[in-house]
Length: 276
Image 1 (cartoon, rainbow, N blue to C red):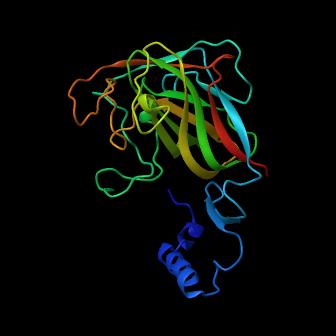
Image 2: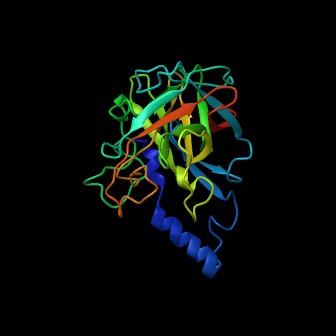
Image 3: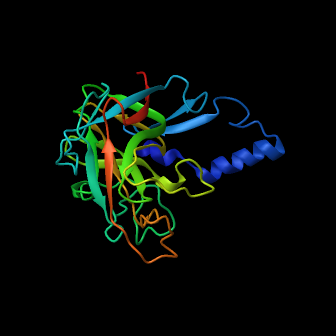
């Protein structure tokens, strides 16, 4: 993607040198005053300075997951709505570690020859039955999302461990599905990153998945989309669903993973919406 001429104004080396000049030499440059935050707003494709991060004026807005139980792939009926769910069917898929969802673009580094980073069309990923897809209708007006993105997910698994992935996508009117930001959570580390704790098969847990941050204006006619699955490989290590590491075990176990979205289990994508 081409984010326009403003994107080329970012000079990482220059900014770093200015910071050190201010910090160690006391030079009165751009770091001596002014706003401390600068972000690039995709969609509008421009830089903007802010007083704080996260933005104080950003309003956390819940987009609840919804479907009739057929959210599998982009051809399903998964939806995102600001209205809380009442009574709904569940969505399920089989995660097979031997056939993980492939990494397509994203915040990658170090080996662009074999795994290209950045914004890439997610159509191929969204055609898989082990990827749940939830979308809004085409937007009636521009909507800005700037700040940390999270997913509050209610889910259960047939295994003693599994992963849950989430990806925020901007769908253009021509169908181009642009990935914005993504995250993952290992079920056995849902409460702590220091010690694994297996889950009880069939038990519903609430998972808070950090999708990191973004700044994007979903333009009029675009759709907000969420992908939910259990793998994003090779960016993230595959979970063998056994509570053992893929590097130390060769036993692969398929997991049937189920996403709930009803009044008692209001799974929701939480976006920092900036008033415009």
